[in-house]
Image 1 (spheres, rainbow, N blue to C red):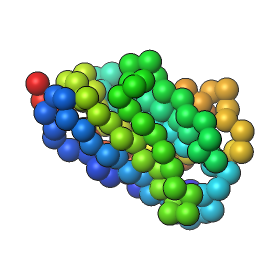
Image 2: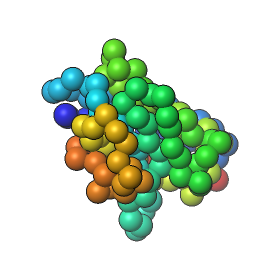
Image 3: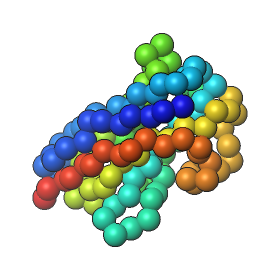
Image 4: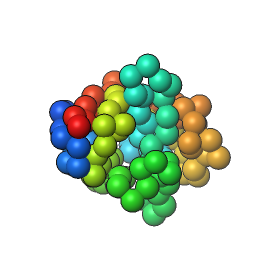
Length: 126
């Protein structure tokens, strides 16, 4: 599946953004989805994941309570609402997908995904 992420931008600390990821090329069902981010000079890290049905969601401790992942299978999109932004949230955010009805035990790792979007930059100013 091809993934296209958008919605990044420059925002002040405490602000919010809504990132979206549009999937194309295959039926969106039976894919679990994830968001990762890569801060400047650091490795890519897990942010959030959602099962194909949307019934279960998982978050990194650093974003729990501030970020919310959701999906609309009818529109082939997965969204990430990010609130109470902090300067340390500055990163390129990537959406990712794996075709599987069952969430992999490696959902928190880039190895748990097969397809990646191009990334969208979020910059948080203090």
